[in-house]
Amino acid sequence: MKNSTDQPLSLDYLPGKTLRKIRESKGYTQKYVAQGIIKQSTYSKIEREEAEPAASKLFTILDRLEMSVGEFLFIQGDYAHSKKGAILYSFVNQKYNAPDELEKLKKEAEDYLTEFEDTVVKDIQSIYESLIVFGRTHDIKLARKYVQPVWDRIEAFDEWRLTEIYLVNNIMFFFSADSAIYISSRAIEQLKKYKGFNDSSKLRYNLKFNLVYLFMDSQKYEEALTALENLIPYTKELKKHDMLAVCYARKGVSMIKSGDESGEDWLDKGLNMLDIIEENELKELLKEEIKSFIN
Image 1 (cartoon, rainbow, N blue to C red):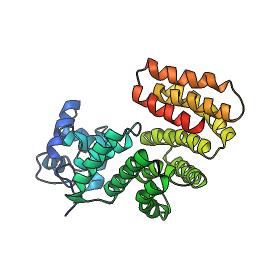
Image 2 (tube, rainbow, N blue to C red; image 1 turned 180 degrees about the horizontal axis):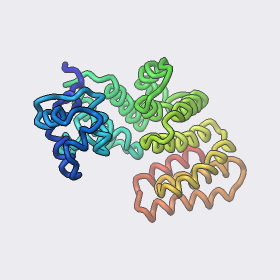
Image 3 (cartoon, one colour; image 1 turned 90 degrees about the vertical axis):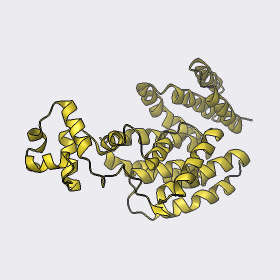
């Protein structure tokens, strides 16, 4: 079995032709790009792929070109993700747990693991398996068996990076409500150091969104309503209409479970919004969620 070097989308691969393409598209000279970083003659050799830059120099060159490493690798791959990159992209951008889609994503992870050894992709495969098992059996203990090793590995880390936080965001539901709330709160705390980093804002939103469900699952409906008071305006600002519909429905559930029957109006508002934006699959999933709380 190979290591996870998934070539050619790697910083080990000579980047000269891609750098030249980007530089010329921006109308920049070699002198401008190299200035203060390396000699122009050295940079010229890099573009001709007669020399290769140290990683620190490449990062600085990319910054001069207003280019992130992720975007550079995407362009270098002819505007496509690497195999691992595609798996990570699908995992991070998964909207909700549709069984057929989960099976497809799990198969992609399994196929990758037949070629490469990779801890994170193995974790993702385990998470997909747990979600599929739970969707079929609603046996949370059985589903937890698949993600327990993922949590055991991550829990021991002194600090979590974004990859670890994405993973825990998808496994915390398989633990007790109090444990899940602890995991979510720890992840949100870890994200504070990423303030101002674009990728962290979406993850922070997802954690707070999921925390509402955790409060509801532990019958802490007042805490859920308090969290929703902050989350609903932010969801409107982001124009996440599908998630706003879910927030409305969860507000309705929490109100009803707190003794306020006017929550029925919020349930209707959420479900009607999904009709309007034609999110039929999400509507069915939301109806199942509502039914699980209100018999």
